Length: 263
Image (cartoon, rainbow, N blue to C red; front, side):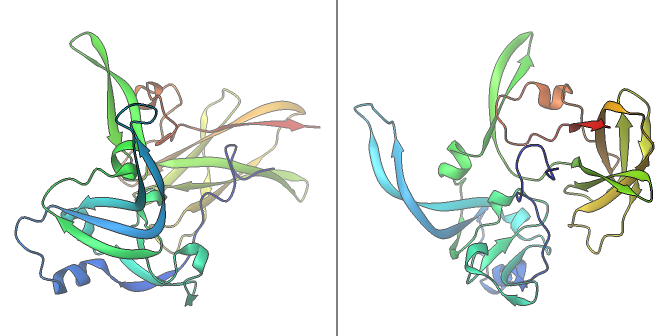
């Protein structure tokens, strides 16, 4: 059974080693007026703007993401050159990459080649055109569309697998988010929410494994989970207004339902 119904190997845990981003910025003596920090990766590729029009422009673009100076000064942010006690592998961003806990993976720029401070917003491809959430909102009785750049991680969980132990079944899953996980609840079919058992976590930024013992009847069942963080936020249902009007996949953190058949 796959770990997540969308794709596998998209989320993982590692022990990162490096130096403080805030410490580097302080040592650089940031000038007054700086508002945003841009992180440039070494990866490049052709970009096309206004494709198939008389205004079409092609150029060699560089991957880059940005965050506000206040966000960049978070002491949790690291410029990493080690992973799990060893030098950072090439596939994971050697020789140095940004690790910004609580942000979507795209913000953690690999193969870091430069850091720039700006006095205005940076709107490159991966901030202003790609990795943008499009949603419908209602204003003054009219529906309109808004676009926002993907930034901080959202509260998530998912039932991962069902295993048999000593003649009983157990549901295992994961939960993660920008704030520490306080609880995970599981619903079987359309029953009441039941509190799962959280396993220990060595970091507030790591995912929390959870499990729930289960004694089902034969047949097909649905298993849904929802995470609750220490701030009291609850992972929304798929039809919750906060995500129901989204037109893009990005920032989809609705409750995941798995279908399980018991022989």
